[in-house]
Length: 192
Image (cartoon, rainbow, N blue to C red; front, top):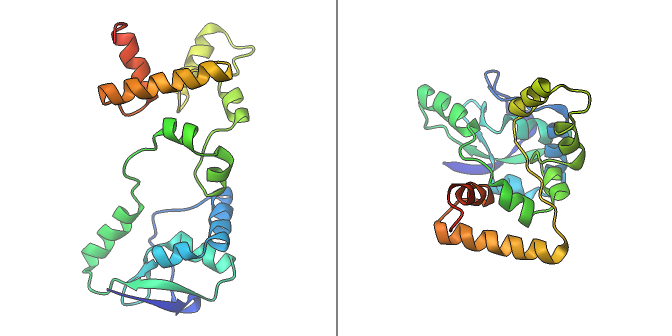
């Protein structure tokens, strides 16, 4: 498969593209391309022999918005029609999940949000846990319907460092994936 720079005007958006990008995320993608154009060299747009996009429709749209004149593309012109359809879907499937413990402890939420990752903010957490004026049943329904359940623990700086170290040690000792699993393990067996 060949990679080369191609004029944007030669590339055709895929009319059967199954993915869309909303306003805020689209703006973040445009900004990302403007601020880090090397990303396009590392992850070029994929086109078929007819110059129709198989992978990167939203990047193409964002490149146009960013004012680029040409972009790197990979020519996947040896794929059958079935393989092209398969590629379109598989390229857009998000495998795996984010480890929110690592994100929360190792990354700046504002920076990674500007890169396009949807992260929480204090307003979101406040709104998600605002049960003012709700009866018990409605409070429970709101909590159960929330996409992410949250528990807040408050520590002073010294205690926080000790707790994180302790959680990290337990996570490693028991081969757990994140701090949430550490809490579950502690609940199962208080003597670990």
